[in-house]
Every structure is written in structure tokens, then in C-alpha cells.
Image (cartoon, rainbow, N blue to C red):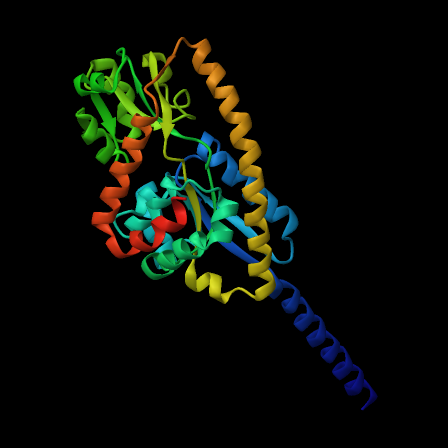
Length: 322
């Protein structure tokens, strides 16, 4: 009997240890993530820092496992991958899922900082649209403070000169380029260098950062100022996954999102100053076409988004455009 009793005690102790071990493991959740560009590239770098921060401070609580970049999940499929739950989290611009939620791209037109958007109600309104159309939680964003530009290998002195150019475009600045009268070609980034070499295009639209990453700098002679819009790269979490997290896990990720807001300010300032110098040193001349040019860019895209998502933009514009 004593022997049986000792066995039962050992068994009970083993069960307690197993339960305790399971409890410890259950406290931590690992999120499967992807990024729309290689993690080492300009617009992947900050997401990499975010992952490192989460994994460093979230041990026993939340971890992020990077599945990869576009080689793992094609860039234009990552929005749907989050929506369906194939991915738990992704770093992706709203233009990449604008066919599903066109109003999400209104964020690039905002005159407010991300911190101001969180206070004004603009962030909540954007998040509501992501909940409804993307089945996603809008956790964080980065890139704000990096404007878009037209770059060309032909001189531009006035707004009217752009009519003579053939420009590479993407949907979020196509409406603006159309108002400028340029001839447009929609090309993926991988085809732009060859198109510049062969004269298929005279220039392209792209943010301030990244033209040298892609090999386009050597074919670029002019940058048209002022910049327009803002780069926005959203960090989305599958909505069901977000709801399945405990309150302390959601609070932790929200705190990491606020950290990213601050990190983005420093990153943008540092990167932009270095890039401006690099472009000057490479012989790229800045041509300033004045505030009317910039206003034309904003008016064109607000008008386009209002056609595509009238009710949503009616609610968003007063919150974002102040």
C-alpha cells in the first residue's frame, strides 16, 4: 500500500508539473508574419526592427516568426493571406489591397501625424474599414514623412513639361499623372530599370527613399519637388487572431505599435537626410514646381477615392485632411 501511495504521489506531482509547463507555454503566442519587400530592403527594415522589439520584450507573451518576404508570399497576395488567416500578421501598403478596401489608401493623403490620427478618431475610422473589409486589425503603420516624387531623365521646368513625358505609374498616383497629361505605363518595380534603359519610359513615380536599392539612380537626372502624399506601410493582424489574444497580449502589441510611431520619426529623419545627400552627390537635380503642383496631386486622388468609396471617404476626409 505504501508503495502504491508513493507511486500515486509521484504521478500527481508529474501531472502538476505537466499542467504548469502547459500553462507557461500557453502564455506565449507566436504570430506568422510576412513583409511585402525583402526584410533587408528600405521598406522592410523598419518591420524587421519591430519584430526584433516584439520578440525581445514579449518573451513568454507574444513572438513573431517571419515567414519571409515576397518570395514566401507574393506581395499582392499578402493582404488576402491576412484576411483569410493564412498569415497572422503582415507589413503591406494599403495600395496593395486597394481593390478590396480602397478607402484604406486615404491614409497617404493625411495631413496629420499618426499620433494625431490616433487622437482625432481618424485611426479608429481607418481601423473600422479594415475590420469590415479586410477582416484585419490595423495595428501600426510606418513610412509617414517620406513623400512620393516624379523622377525623370529629361528636364522639367514647368508643370506643362510633364505632358511630354512617358512615366511609370501605379494606381495610387495614376489619377494625378493623368491630370498632368503624361503618357503612362503601369510596370512592376522589376521592369522599371530595363524600361528606362530602352526608353520605354522617361521617368517614374516613387518615394524619396529606395531608388538606389532598385538600380534606378543611374538613369535618373531630375527629381520633381515638392513631394506629394506620404508613404504608408500598414501592419495588419488577422481580426480573428487579434480577438483570440488575451487582453495583456493585445495591450503589449498596442504598446509596441506606439513604440514604432516614435521609431518611424527618427528613422524617417535619418534616412531622408542621407538620401537627399546621396541624390545630390549622384547628380540628380531637384526641380521645384511649387504648391499648385502639390495641391493638384492631392485633389486628384481625393476625387478618385471619393468615386471608389464615397461613403467611407465622406467620413474619413474631415478626419485626415485638417
